Amino acid sequence: MSHRLELACAAALAALLVSPVLAQGHDGPPPGDGGPPPRSEEDQALSEALQARMGDTSTLMETVPIPEDAGGCGDTPGYDRMLCLIDLLKADVSEDILEKLQLDYSRTEAEYWSNLPAGAFPKRPGVLLGELNTRQRGLVKAIMMEATGSQTNEGWDEMVQTLNADDYIDTVSTDYKAGYSSYNTKFAFLGTPGPTGVWELYYGGHHMAFANTYVDGQLAGATPSFRGVEPFPYFEMNGRVNQPLTQERDAFATLLSQLSDDQKAAAQLEGTYRDILAGPQADDAIPDSFEGLPVSELDDDQTALLLTAIRTYVGDIAQADAEAYMEKYGSELSETYLGYSGTPQLSSEDDYVRVHGPSLWIEFSLQSNKSTEKVGNHPHSVWRDLNDDYGGQQK
Image 1 (cartoon, rainbow, N blue to C red):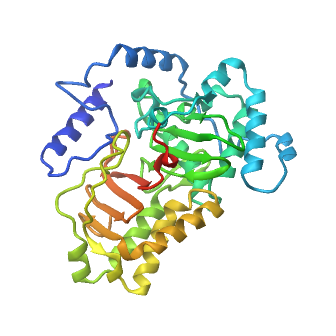
Image 2: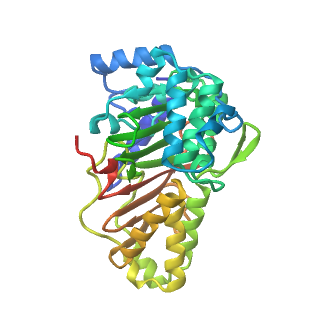
Image 3: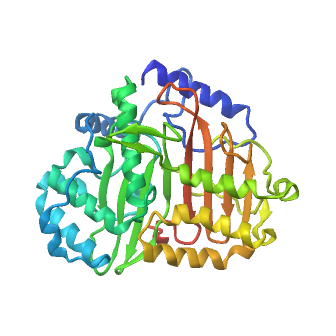
């Protein structure tokens, strides 16, 4: 770990110790007495093996072309086209790459996601995007575009911008071992994709976790779904202005600004939230009790603003699946609660907002910058479904 990251981690720990709420998922390995705790022999071996594979170049996923033979999978969006594209990719890679790409399904393996950069979390399964050639990355792009939303700043477009953020950090960070580069994002199939059986489309890296789980050809769960970004709210990289998570922040800030003083008081949560609760390796962190303002006390315009904010998360998946989730969450609004801590503008460190329903859990949290040495804040955010996280799989 670089001296800079050690200082950042120590500062983050000091801030946590004075807070009544201990949040999960820091941007660096958890500090101990002067540094991270010692790794197990297994984790050390995984780390050394991953360091040998990692790179520091951009995958340029926005401009990488989709191969012409992908047209043979038809032009009708959906599950069958995605399976066809997956078969093309698996047929194109070497045996060594296929061993990393196609893995058995287990809930334990699916839980190995993180907000940390590649070098700080070596347990992520899968092949690195940078280990694939341009044609293969084009097929990954086509597969992900089938599974994700197509709106600007949502779905695949948001994922591309998050990759660009790592490429940006790579230009200002001196800590290569952390793995700040789009090269080091992981992609895998946990379980064999097909018309029957259980499998997960796994895509994740620094500040990104996408986990669509399919059972017998149907989407059984689209969560955990984690997003973060630094710098924030925008930066220029790879030929474009990037602003992932700005729409989530703006949607919630607009909603909170429309609450009355009494509603704001009811929505105010106790304590300070320095990060999200239900982050990586924190699957049991969602409280059983509900806190904040009952959504039933919102008027029609405020309810519409809440649904707009929810859609900025659910819209990250393909449209038909997103509509099914929106219908479910809409039907549960009478039992859903809105809460926040900090300022309603969601523009300062420790500003935090959550939505908690019978199924739905969304968190958005701002914390200080850690990787760019620039003054400011960056968000962590998560969407979880209390009923079908990991597609409802337990093993």
